[in-house]
Image (cartoon, rainbow, N blue to C red; front, side, top):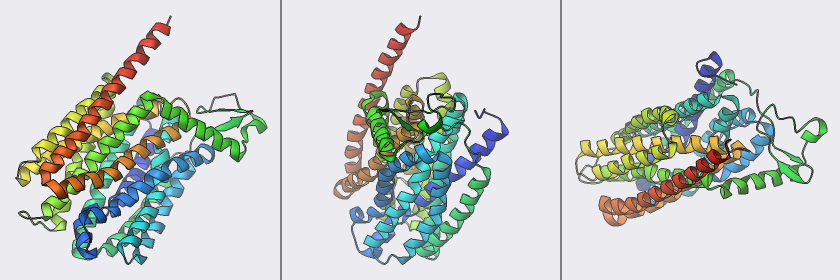
Length: 429
């Protein structure tokens, strides 16, 4: 197992962080361009949101298939295939000449991105020690935020100076170079065992040392493998300590990413009327999330992760209210708090699902991300509609409804966690 502080740990975390950085650069390249693209195509803010939602939604739908494939083919192969697809799919976007075609190309990008996102944490869960895992996940999610920042800033600036096509070409070149570096640095797995079918029942092996499967018994039929994966999905969704954390991640992301989209529309509109190259700078506020994502690993070593999810949600909610004040500096302060709280909650919920899933970990983390990105996709149409019909006051009302749901989910998760801890205590001699 990879221990914290070893050369293998440093190589693995850097490689995984770089892969994560590439994924989120590509995913959010078009987010700061939504107001510009709405004007370019002559469509409403809600319709142009498909440029963001198509990528996140297709990513969400592709996570479980990629995770299922990784249970047989291995996490390592899937991650590399995913990364090397990025420049290929990115260049396909250059052929798009309408909002529909560009949205479909962005959907194809989401499918490519999903491979790495679906299995990276499962790779960590199998290859890292328990302590190293929590810290590595924090680093990985910090790279998420940095990638999101870089992709948005790059997209806004290059599009303002040249065009979105130039931005796409540059991102494809960068993605290819990054994929090559990940291939060179990422250690090959030592503790992966495939999920297999055994007799008439399906069992799951997540430990290299599991001796239940040997010789020809470790070669499942395709049908048996799919049945095994279906059973794993049902098992995870029936586990309230997993499913509630997945819902927390989805609602949290629905608020976080789309409050930024709404803020972009707010800043390009009167009385601010800022150019897109300037409004894209709001994504520097993601840096506060980079810090809190790292801190989440240390929090989980000393305090309850569920309590941390509540704390992060409170901080994010305060940012929503502070951003209501009509001052650019105060609005930025609000975004800093939204990022800080949202990334703290996401890091803890993500690591929670990976840790609590006892079997088929890649499927479990993929299911978390399905909820996460579906929340981001649907939440965009919801909050942008609130903005169009009620301005920031409408966003406040709509946002508070989601925060109320988020707190209720955290409360239920804590209750189930306490019940499970009580049962374990009674069972311990």
